[in-house]
Image (tube, rainbow, N blue to C red; front, side, top):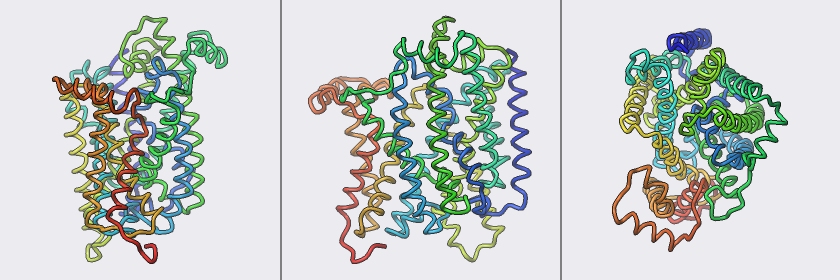
Length: 507
């Protein structure tokens, strides 16, 4: 497979995005950038959000988990479905009733300015880390399989990718992304389906016989009933539900697209449609993972889980399939980065700088501030991606994804307290509570999951063994899993309760 051939398709794909951006960003203004003038088509938003939610991590990592864990990831997907329904019928009505541009404005309405900026700050930290982690994973694959052979250094690859994203997002923002995400989701799903069909035909199977063989190998098991396991079905389902509420419903990037839809009813239709498609697509990724496991066994492929899909697609499959895989991979790359860059720009301008409150600023000055912020976040993305490369450890992706459980926990606690309770908090103390809660949860999780942290962070010394003994004494064989986010949110809620007082009426 010629690296130049693959590279030419990458460039061609980007040029297609530029054409779409040109037509969708004409006559754009700040409202177009932030919320798409509230005129987005709900069907396009629903379909395009698939690409944003899946990202390169799902595209590469989920199939790689099947060999070791079977279909147990689908427990989390069941939780996702519950979470999306909670968003559709609890959070979206709230956002539309308040006519929000930034969802964190709710915290200002409910608690005050400190809580408002605290929520925005936690979103900015979490989304920056999460988006750059996903960006690094895909850029590194492109680097290893294509650009190293062309003599292109990693830093230059990163700059070029970020410049590509800036070029098609800096003017149109959400208005453009709704259309580009739809295009990119189509190519991503095309890559997924083509690879599934090719491997099934290569192995001489249909869908029914494939599931039978995977079942005989024990790869189609879904539910884990071991209560001590971190992947126990209730931990995964509850964790999946609250991860969805926090990382979708309380995330400006994801909600920015939903509240760009004309009205609440269409936005709810978007969310429900999106959740059903997401469940089906995740099942297809797990099916692909099972097929890749069998394919790897027959071809003697022995690589780390995250390398299984790209290695099989680029080294063991026909040229046409390899090209479709590369297009699908970069289609997974762009939605997770372009939406994050736009949402971070929106949140920083509106929530931190108070762009909407600067009534004396002209439209041109607001646009200048927005562009400077957009380019600044792109530069920050560049620095963080280079940091991942310097560490040169793929497990850092797992570390960053785990960090999301800590950074979204305070958001979950803030919004839950605002919606459930009628009490009024001491707004000035909310930042302290939101900092202390994840720090305490981090200490608990470090003790409980010291075996996980040790290789990830290269921990050593006699104290590590002492912590393992303490973990055994305190928790026995019980391991905290995806429900970590729930514990974090509950602790934040209790902290807010401690700094609150009764109110005669709700805000």
